[in-house]
Image (cartoon, rainbow, N blue to C red; front, side, top):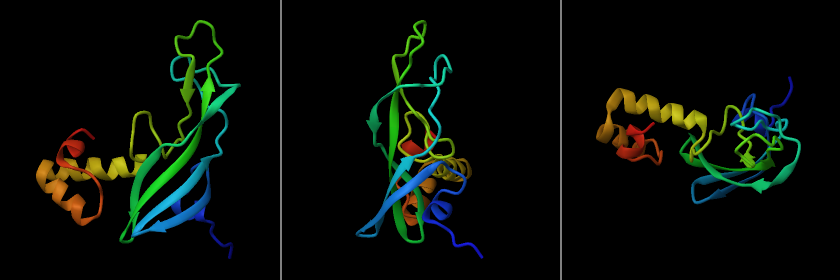
Length: 143
């Protein structure tokens, strides 16, 4: 039987490599790096060829047991080389994990959307506190 890696447990089928996991007072901080192929410009859809720099957003992720999980995901910032494109740089998104302008993972956003749909503002916020999810009623209503 093949042993599972940390990536298989935390991010099944997602192109990331886990570089470290730290536990700070009940909060798991996962340091991860994108291993996906170069991203495409969100405007013109041309595949990137040149890396500008790297960027490390922090994403809230679904809890693991009683622990809150934060993913510090290092992604690449690319140049868009198409002259007719209005965008000069863009950040890659990791399919299945990150989305533009999001502070939480796609998985956690799905959980929050389901909770908000079923319960509404304040009751959903109370449930989130019990589940150790950081989401107030206004954030839940905007999911």
